Image (cartoon, rainbow, N blue to C red; front, top):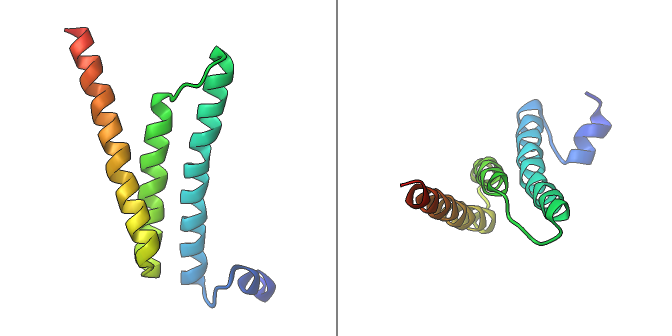
Length: 103
């Protein structure tokens, strides 16, 4: 890895490099949820929020929370932690509704 890449990513060593890669991976997961939602909405011609949106939200949120904890960023930690609670609650409500309709 060249020093230029380290400078560009604002990292000083391999440990920080891999944490930035984890953070970027979490951000990609989080961003993927919007693509899933957009494609699902385009297919039916109206705004919908597919189940995958919530799973990608939790996955990306957990990875980003882990990264935020490593960086000790209280603003980022609070934002991701609150989001994870909301995404989890939405999944709980979706699955509870499905159980009610399957009985």
